[in-house]
Each structure stands twice: as C-alpha cells, then as structure tokens.
Length: 374
Image 1: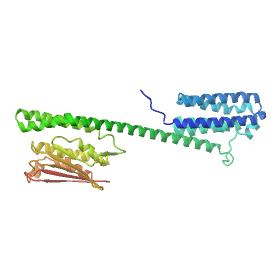
Image 2 (image 1 turned 120 degrees about the vertical axis):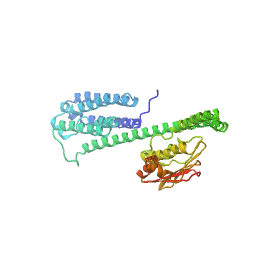
Image 3 (image 1 turned 90 degrees about the vertical axis):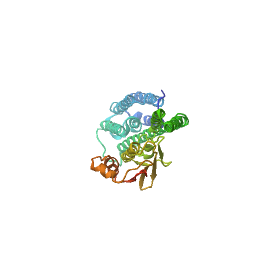
Image 4 (image 1 turned 60 degrees about the vertical axis):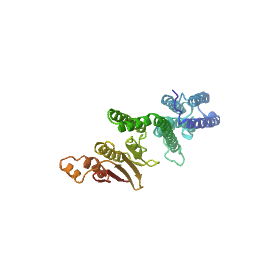
C-alpha cells in the first residue's frame, strides 16, 4: 500500500538549507574564537562532532527515516550537550563575554526540527531548553532583550515553524479528503448510469406491467417495485455523505426516497442546511411520504419538490390519491391518533418553520413544509 506523502517535506528541505548556512557560520565563528578558547584542541574535536552530526541529521531528514520523535529527541540531546560543553573548552570569563559554543544560531536547528515533528509547543519548548543551557554556561540570565534577543528568536522560530507545519498537514488532510470524495462521487455516477440504464429500468417496467395485468402478476409487481426502491436508495445513499462543515444537503436526503411511484425534483446545486435541521426536515418529508404510501391508494403517485428561496427552504409533497375527507384529521386527533401532529407539524414547529396541509376527498393531498434559514 502506497504511503501518503509527507506534507512537511518542503519544510524539511528548507530546514536543511538553514542547517548548511548555520554550519558555515559556526565554522567562521570557530576559526575566529578558537585561539581564545581555554582548550583549542578540544574545541576543534567537538566542532568535528558538530559537523558529523549535522551531516547525519541532514541525510536522515532528507531521506525521511529521521522524521520521527526519537531522532529529534536525539538531536536535541546532542545540541544541549554541545552547548553545555562550553564549560570545558572555554573559561568562565570567555563564556560570560561571548555567546555559547557552539553558536546559538546552529543550536536553532534543534528548535526547527522539534517544531516540525512536535508542533509549535514542542518547538518553543526546545527553544527554551537551548536558552536554559546557554544561561547555565554563562552563569547568569540577561534580561535586556535589546541586547540579548536570542530567547525571543528561539520562541518565534519554534512558533512560526510549528504553525506552518500544522497548517500544511491540515491542508493536506483536507485535500486528500476532497480527492477521496471526488473519486467516490465519480464512481457513484458511473455505477448509477449503468444500473439506471439496465436493472432499474427493467424493475420499473416489471412493476408497471404487473400492476396493469393484475392477479398474480400484481404480487410480482410489488416485489419488483420494492427492489427498485431499495436499489435507488442504495445508489443515492452515499450522496448524503459527511456534513460539509456542519451542514448537509437536503436534496441528497430527499433523493433517497425516489422510486417508481415517488418523483423527486431538487435544484442542481446543493441545498445546504445545518445537519440537524436538514435531517429533521427530511424526516418530516419522509413521514408525509409514508402516509401517502399507506393511505393515498395503490395507484397513487407522489411528487416531491425542493425549493431554495434564499431565506427559507420549502419541500412540497403532493400525491394524486384519494385525499382526506373533511373532518377526518380532527376525528383522528380526538381518537388519540396524533401521528401527523407530532411527526410532521411538531417537527416543523420545533425548527421554527411551518407545515401546511391542503387536501380534500378525491383531490389528493399536498404538504408544504417550510423551514427558515438561521
């Protein structure tokens, strides 16, 4: 299985360019101060360790096998040890009058590596550790940031590089998710075209012809109709997908209810609402569709229309069935059958919207569900 590319790879390359420049600066500093050190030979020996470790880190980070916490911790330890070695190669007076050996510029490499692996907190903590080691060598802390701004620089580098890494990784994750969703959508569309041109059309034909023939063929028609609805629901179910931010597409939710007897019309563009609002609106529409399937009659067809009016979203569910006689709803309510009041009207009112019912005996039924955008 192919591994995902490291989104921080460009930062690792830039860090090694900085490492090279800091090594050149450290070499110039070593040449300039070596004769003033208390143990010049030891200074050159330790400088050899510095160059060797820098080369090893550059190879490890560029090849990738060093981009893990253990290697970075080892780099921090080596850097702190070399900074503390100032006490062994230089006098106390030299340490008080100069920056640490090696230079804090070279020591910043550890701060950068820690920021890339551990983020801004890890980078800033490493910068503080480097400054603590430098303070131990000098024997005192210089509070004058105008003359000693190294601590500010270390913290700023750790913070900036760490935040850059977090941003790069977040953007990479979002790009990968978008690529996966695009690929899945394309595959769904391909599958939908193939299935719709074959199996679904055959099932719809069997369902329609079976109802026309009647008798035993009517039972076969019902089975074909059920399978057609399940197949349509299966194909379109992935369209709902994860919410975009905290929103969901109402059109995708409604398309799941399409069948040979239910026609769903939605806008070409997604109609986005807060995920919980979209789910409740789709549930209310589903209750209306269930009522139509149960009471509109075996030959009734249902038409669902979704409209995005900007400040509100409207779902209309209309059937051409037998309708509801005058007074029947009040009678059902008096009998304690409050399915419509709770499942449809109650849902819409809880969203701050409304549910309007238009019906009459022999004239079908129409629900108009309206929910405002907040």
